Length: 565
Image 1 (cartoon, one colour):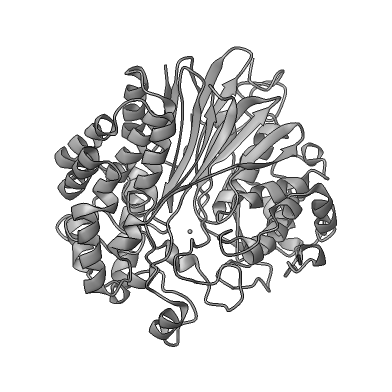
Image 2: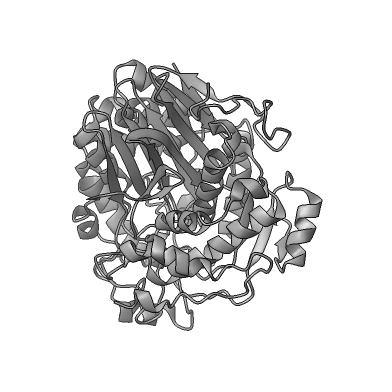
């Protein structure tokens, strides 16, 4: 029986089935489960579990591997967030391992450097903030790890030196990203270092081509030998400092040395009997919770999965929640964020009135009187003891800032571009401040037991992906694999924390599994359809508490794999 009692495992039982749903079965395991966006990273994580490592050990090893095999989307030049279910403590822990802006770059200086630009450039030296990933690894390991970090990094060091063949989806996105960066190289000082590290004979690798990164192997070896200080102090930090000074970045070795991750309490709402957890800002996770609160007032199952009525409600709920996201989500060290109000059922009831069931909204006001008081890799791991990790890590855009410090083998992320220069905004740029961050791990419990560890990669698609997966499972009874493979929508053009406002209702993309008559009806209601967009990438582990079995899933849109034993 499925973890949701009485529901079909295959989609061929007494409910919805067909080509829009799972193309493969969920993966089952009793002692452990790993799901990542690359099979090699999954196998490395699985090996760690089989050696007696914890879920956190395996997650660190797998994340390090993704920095080798999927460097366009993740790596140690970026940030990390995690939610950990501790079987020992029977509680959830949250880690915010995102970095801050350079202390030596004032708002006034940055404004002068921008000249007539209204926003921080997407690429180049001004987009760089402190990378938080490595400190995140060591914070997680200190609390939940068992196997030495040097042992966890060893497989990635070997593969970085020997090389790995590039799979289909990663090869395609690598080529697209390389062309985009080349088109914008005027903004990227020191771009030759990127070419030397991530191109082969001047070109991005193609599917099946072997890619090596010996510089990253050396950097990993320094981290293995010296711990977190092997990255934030010593030769690596000094190299970053020298490169930053040469290329016009204000990131300095003192910024690196002073960086620390923050343990936070995950926040939650109850949706139809399930407690859904996300991390509080500076991330965007609470947008998922706000959308769930809004949708709780509708009978979604009665409307039918991916019907026009159903999709319209989800899209409009997204618009409403994203207005608050644009206005209030920021670094809580700099702004008082009314999280409790934003997540309250009363607030959701008021905001729900903004949703017209028959007409798409062109604009929505975020200024409710009651409130006046970024590409990515995701992975999840579960171990035999019952500890489960939901971890997400990102360069921001593919290959981030495009800036690769000399001889280190990784790209610095461009998360700093997520600040706004708008005076008085909660997310206004300031020195030593964490920018708004898009990467969000998700977790669900039911009756005090872990139920689902999951994530959906891809900037502003992430909350939309979380929402659709959760509705697929909770409202429509899909299994964990079906929930990720089902056709999705992606809405873009909402107001953003960088200061832009939605005035035209935004744009809507629908995957091919959504019926033509549904598309026509959504257009009739005022949605502006576009042909293509990014629909995310999903991995998940579901826990069947009755049978004590893990169910793993990795969706068909990625090269990934779920594997258990």
